[in-house]
Length: 395
Ligand SMILES: [Zn+2]
Image 1 (tube, rainbow, N blue to C red):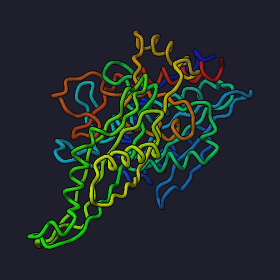
Image 2 (cartoon, rainbow, N blue to C red):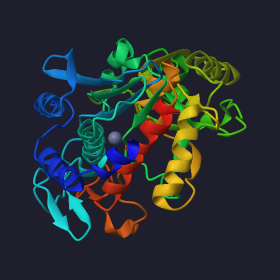
Image 3 (spheres, rainbow, N blue to C red):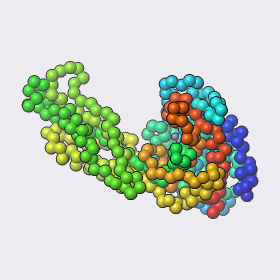
Image 4 (cartoon, rainbow, N blue to C red):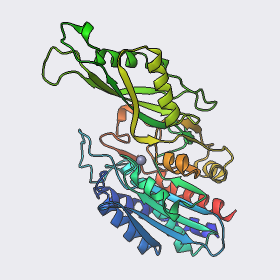
């Protein structure tokens, strides 16, 4: 029966949808128009939709196809937002331009091509009249490129009561961007250092908060890092440092503050990370008093079993369609899977059209000017989506 759905995959539809989507500005914060487009398209395919207003004018969109027999539930997910327009675009970022196999436009790769393949999969299943067991559902969420509010809101709905989620992010699952079997979490340290003001000519009467803050930053390599068997150690990066006068004055600064991004491996939590920083600060015997806080965004690390049912559905399908074995990795980064899998404990697959292995000099990567997707990936991904849905739900 699934063969019929496979035969009904309409690659011209995929490309048409992708072009239409690139024309809609959905820069993070302005997802409303694109959400409406997706909702209308799903309804024209005969799916029942639901919207959840996450922020004013910024809804998540959901849809589902219930099977005629009880079974598992599988959700295909994407994020509606793109990053803002960066400098240096050579074409109009909202006008899709074909250059050989490349389709250039903002969000083409991250991740409107993924949506085009999901819609194609849903259309093929609908057109075939094929009923999958359980439930095949869809979610489009806002704000992935910022604080991930859309994914967090989705966790509170029934659309997160699923056995697995396929994220249509640009992951070719090859050497260039392997399929994550887990992803690091992250926190943002917000460290406040309080000293004592004094005349700058008599520093011995004060406590210099800037100098004490600098000592902490200079010693961050002594932070404790858990050595995880798969990920090994996380990392840190100081992102901001401030203190001292706003207008020139010869005063020993009484306060300083800095922010440090830290990637967490499974087993590390915001609480253990705060304890690690406090331990480091205590070891430095500073005169200043130090407050270690964290500020948003924070994400949970996760790791999934190599034999999770969604991986077992994906692996043979990838081999069949792409013609080689997928590559797996324990990844350093953040996606909405940190919310779905890290918080919601839902196994997540990352698979979507991308630009593949290309010359780095070519540019046009995700979050770069002249973003493009290699359109030869779309038919492959649409086919994998159909086969994964069949394998996961019907077996
Ligand atoms: Zn993305």
